[in-house]
Length: 74
Image 1 (cartoon, rainbow, N blue to C red):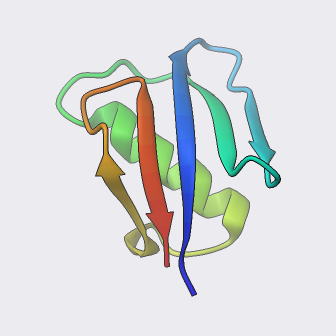
Image 2: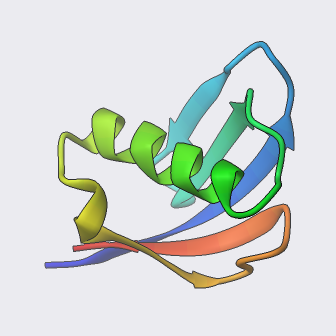
């Protein structure tokens, strides 16, 4: 069973992370700058720790270069 979430990303050293299951929305503040995919890797690792799944089970399906992304968790 897979789930899709809308992810809103900010770049802030606070490292905040919230998940709203009713709206299927994740708000996250990343410490890494968006250079050469580093921010996307940090995002996937952060989400995988929260949902206790492997990073390979998470895919960005829309918004690879945007602050608003759609991810799918398998």
